[in-house]
Image (cartoon, rainbow, N blue to C red):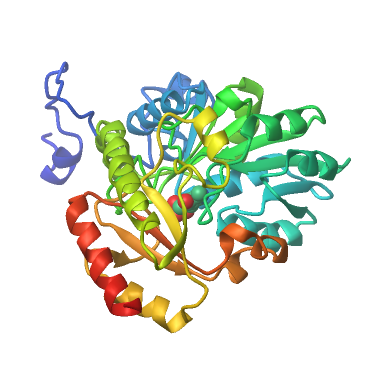
Length: 393
Ligand SMILES: *Cc1c(COP(=O)(O)O)cnc(C)c1O
């Protein structure tokens, strides 16, 4: 009996010829993965990349992206999660238990600290903030409950570049696992694992995506046992990424090194120009001579993200600073970075840093952060000039 067309449309006989190749890899999408027979289903093994079991545990598309990100970071094993923040949370949940302590740099990505203050605290995991520019101070803080040290280079918003190797060495000497948030360096400016860290995470939302249109995160290790631990937590939490999102990141990875270099060049040009402006008390860009941690940056990095902050003079009012930001035309107001559109965000240092940091000389005044996109530098500079003139002139 011929089968009904409804059935034929699902179980169609035609198979396109194998061997198709194109510059971009195919996009596989699945919750269900079909097994060839019961034996194959029983033999399924979601841990190794030997085969497929369920969409959540990987498809050819996500395996490909995982491997490319692991290579980008200089690691061996990778996991993908739906956002950069989810990558931070995955590391915390995989490694921390009730009674443990995690140490975060004072200039940590804000939501990472919020996670520690919220969920981690509720689960009986304590945290303390350390000064990332003080290796001896960090070493003295490590106690018997300290399990995990988070690092960030350069730090979020205030852009201090720490002595990564010194911090990691202090932690390792006490058996503390170290995790680097490598979103700024993106695997391009330096290799996170070279500093000795155990785990490198990245918000793929930023440079690997490069479009301002995808949220994703990664966790990479060199150590198989550590990867296994993270993978188990990843599986039990039900974390996964969509094929179409993985496709967008795979497509953008091809141009990532070029984009990083272009935004670095434009960023440094604008940072140097802003440093000459009378309205600007300080430019916080690790590649600039007088930036906090510049020597560490020079010893560690071959490039810098097109991301920096400026401290506008204390003598201005918050209203003037807001007016400056509102008067910018090409720079749009918004979070995130590494996309095509240049972005600007004003921050209150007193709201994002502890009291000690607030007193620091390099953080006096009003902080405004810039993320440089792909517009022509001359146009961006003209935009900054007109807004400075109108707000402070
Ligand atoms: C953006 C960012 C994250 C979080 O990434 P999302 O994908 O937005 O959750 C984490 N760390 C740093 C340093 C970031 O800049």
